[in-house]
Length: 583
Image (tube, rainbow, N blue to C red; front, top):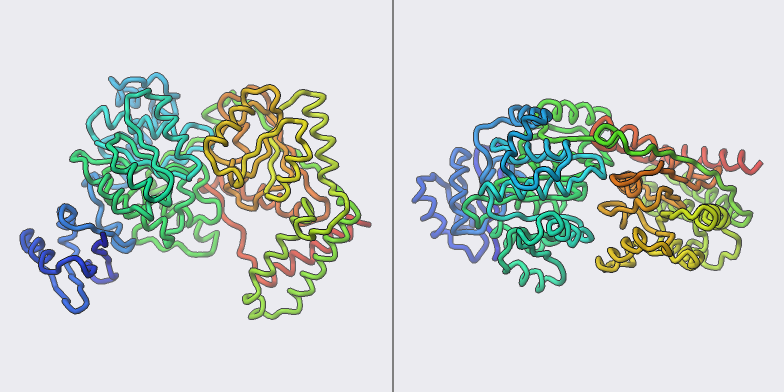
């Protein structure tokens, strides 16, 4: 059913209610009069305006009309939020639970508390405090954010503080959440994993449950149904948003839909290990999701990275309601990890193809002016991406390519040594579908399992992970970091080899933690195969720099936006590096 859209048109002190054709203006007028709300009605445009001082009266209207809260009004309408507790006070309360005695006291009488680690105990105590209605859990990967969120749901249910929970997560994690809840609490809670076609999702959402789990797309396609689920319990509901990096763009349909859902939940938990991988501003929507738009209310974050970093950092220090723990502090006994670069000399035919395409791209950009560059921007970046692909699988760029591929020769030696001589299981990361196809065939003797976008079935992926973890004959996982970089455990291996990498820092950081996580007992080693004298080396160094920078702001500030001049500089350096390497 179409909803009444509620907007705030700054700097005016009014909310604007835009009515769809099938909702009666007269009926809305009557309900507002019952509540003593003054209004102005434009019947021709089907718009009703009310003063901000009456905003909270809209809460009760949800019993009669579906409401959609536009992002402009989100911070002004916080349904079911904890009243009267400033963010500064909430931040102090969260910090106070670092005292484990206080955390244990707060959770006294709750069943299964003994299953939690100390850092998980403090987060659950904070998430379930009566003054906290929204919390971001930005713990580093592998510290059990799912466990903390599910246990917070458990505590709130046992105390009667919520009636239902809704988890929104990436598609490949839906069944994992349902599985983890059952693993932790047995049949103590009824769980509905909402997946499949739109019709199947609608049917599943009609089932009565304690916890619903679905993907982000459901928040868009069935937002009104989810609103009804969240607002139905008289004692409120809990919204959990996992891998919130995917809802960082406030202007996207996905983010707007989830922000609207937040308005109907009494409490919200936002989970992400890499919340700001591209720019400090990425964290804004995620923090505002947890706190109903309050954290960055009135704050303008500039586009320039250093200035944005300072402003965002100041806001977080002042009123950021979040927890952030890292593995080296929480799990000091976790084995060390080492990163090794292995420089590979391109095969002759590869080198000729790479250099030819590099020179062509440089000449093309050099001949363009600023206007042409902006017009052809995507084309230039596609050609730059092709240079990286030539280093890995040149036949994907030139189908009739018949030369040797240098990384295949290097991998033959590395995997022979690790798997056949040392009996080590290995995780092999590759960014390109075409390359993964080749690798699965080339290393069939190692009985590999594959995890990438070509394997959408969650049950198949889970079985692949089980085989690698438990089957002594399955010695190799070949995976794409975008598909397998989050939420899975591959710590039966202690060695990961990167044949190629995603340029998305979040994918890279997530992939590192598939083997370096709880349960790992041996030192971990990462081997990065880089084509010497090529842009691959630059890409790797950029990722390493971003990882270091990310620790300053819970995430990962992006590099400066590439302009024509910067691309020309990079290509010129690449030409010099390649000539130097070849000579």
